[in-house]
Length: 467
Image 1: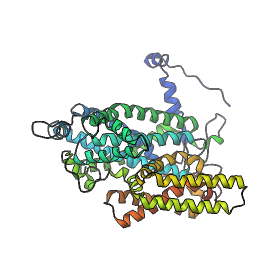
Image 2: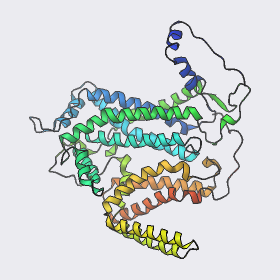
Image 3: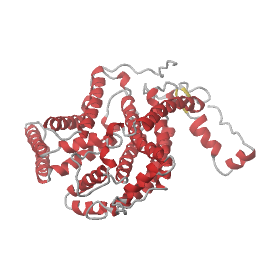
Image 4: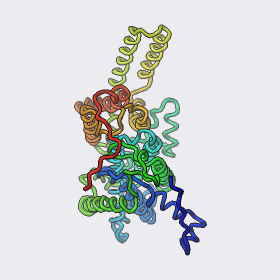
C-alpha cells in the first residue's frame, strides 16, 4: 500500500489547519471519502434529511422571536400563545411564509425519514458492520417523534390541546406510577400553562441539541465503516494499489452535485405545498388547529398528525378482546409446550412463564397494553440487525416471495396510518388489530423466514449502469 501523502497548506488555510483540522475533515468526509458508484434515487433522502433539519432549525429560530408560550387569555379572550401565532401569520413580515415552511417542513421531515429508513430495510443497510449506524438512526427517529409531539402543542389550537391531552394521559396507564408520571409530564393536574412552557423548552432547546448530536454520530459512524449500496457489496474488499476502492468515487464533487439535483426536485415539491396547499387538506395542518384551545369544548374526533397515525392505530387496536386473544394464544402455547419432547424442567419453566404472562395480560388493562404496543412498534426496529439472518443484504437478491412480503409490509403500514386518521369503526378496528399482528409478526418471525427460499448469487463487485 502506498505511503500516505502529506500536503502542507499555507496562508490563512494553513494557519487554520495548524489549529483546527479543517482540511483533514474536508478530505475524510468529502473529497477522499469514497462512496459506492451505484447509488440510485433512494440515496437522495439522507442529504434531504440534512437540508430539512437545517430548514427547521432556521425557521424555528425566527418563529421563537415572536412566539409567546403563554396559555393565559388576553383582553380579547384568546390564549396568548394562539394569538402570538396569529400575529406571526398576519403582522410579521413574511411570518406566514416562515410558519408554513416550518409546519410543512415537519411533515416533509417524516416523509424523508420514513423513505430513508425504508431504503435501509430494502438494501440491508442495518447489517454488519453498520448496526450502530442503524441504532443511531432509530434514536434520531425517536427524538424526531418527541420533537414533533412537543411542537404540536405550541400553537395552542383545539387539536394541539386535545391531542396533547390524550397523549399525555397515556402515561397514566403505566402501573403504580402512572398517575404521578402524567402529572410530572404535564407539570400540573391538567394540560395548561406549565405544560406549554416545558414543552416549549424541550422543543426549542433540549431535543434539538440531542437531535443534532445524534445526526453527527450517525454520519461519523457511517463514514467510519463506509456506505452501503443497492447490491449490498462491500466496496472496501476490492482496492487498487493506492488503497482506493475500485467501485468507489469521491463523495465530492460527484455526489454533492448528484444530491443538488435531488434537493432541487425536493424544493420544487416543497414550495408547491407551502405556497398552494400548506394545510394539504387538513393532513399537514388540521382545521381544528385554527380554533383557539378551549378546555370546555372537545372536538368530535381527536387524532394525531398523519406521521403518528400508524402507531395510533396500533394503540387503538388493543381492546379487552385483544387481551383475551393473547390469553388464548398463551394457552395454546402452553399446550404445545407440554406436548413437546423437551426436558420436563424446561417444559415446566416455560409453562410457568406463559401462565404468568397470561395473568399479566388480564391484570393490566387494555390501555396499558396499547401504550406498550405503540412503544414496542418503534423499539422493535432497534433489533432489526439481529432479527434478519438472511444470507444476502439487498432485496435485489432475495426470493420473490420475500419481495412481496416487504411490499405487503409497506401497504399494511400505510393502511394503518390512514385508519388512524379516521374515527373508530368496527371494520377499522378489526383491520387495525390484524395489521398490528402482521407488523409485529414481520419482525418477530424474521429469524424464521428471512433465510428461507432460493437466493440469487451476489456479485463480487457492484453493478453499475450510468444514467
